View (cartoon, one colour):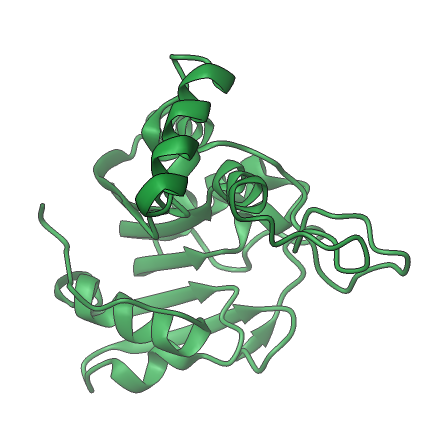
Length: 220
């Protein structure tokens, strides 16, 4: 695998360190962070990198509403474009994906969650409470500030990436997964595994049930 790290992340700040350790070989030159939030990645970049963050919320360099505006830069403006845990929040996910490909001159790094894994974890471990609906996908009694607008599996995410990358003349350089669940340990784990074999279709992939996130690197 071309890009890898043994480091594990648990929140947005540690995710930035994960990204740096894993992708530092291509995080050079001009970098656009789409959905930059608090710009945690910026602290890890070398002096030779030129970082610019856009998005809503947090403290990006430039406020951009991706559901109402195109990415405000000409074609081939950046050496590397990042879009991490952002696309699933957008109604116009297909359009914004194309925009990422348009403004890069070399690489795009994308992170997508696996909604199926979140749902399976809730069923498997019973961490659901009616008064606390499933994060990003539930129906709270008051309108949430943020939510996911697409509920897709790991397999659907891969299919989406491969198709739209080809449509935008991009090569899929690497696809890999993080955050694997398991059926649990001991007798309960064995029972969960047996139950899964009866309850789920045989063509549902391991990644769709167990991987929490899909990481992608595209190259133009």
